[in-house]
Length: 199
Ligand SMILES: [Zn+2]
Image (cartoon, rainbow, N blue to C red; front, side, top):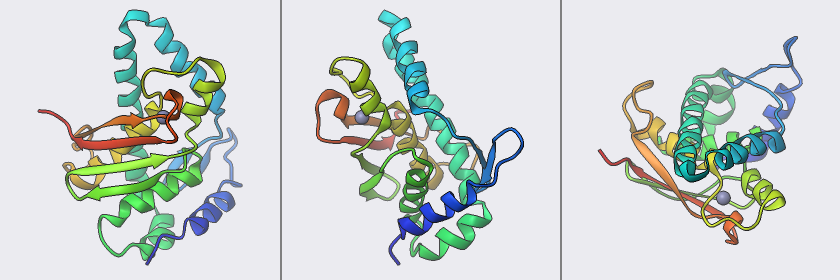
């Protein structure tokens, strides 16, 4: 059965009406909150700018933080009753989980992730046309000379970790992702490729 993204979006919209007293949204087995992408972008890109010649270390830290976040979040998601009831019936094969995760990530507002290639256990290619990081970068800075979507890059690695790494919590960083194309660099879309991390 194909993944019905609209059904997942509907479930997230409905579920996100329930807030705890601090505004936390308990949904899909995890705690969510409404967060400004402008603020997130500012934190990441200014952090990177502040590190100046150590920019690549900032990039690594931001991608790794996103990967850990994606790893823990989707572990919670796939063990939730919402996943069991809404998403699982749409999955035919184990690798369809990646499509399910992408649809949930889209519903969470993380980006319009589309799986363009999956070789089980080896390679995952994900494309996004509306990454908030690329849009935010272009709004505030000049065209980038490297990919700027650290969140989605980390998340792409995390999705492979969850399927093909050691059992949770030991599988994080089994895979790592690069961003080959990025709208912040002038490409038509952002594209992430995850493969096994070097030993
Ligand atoms: Zn990008």
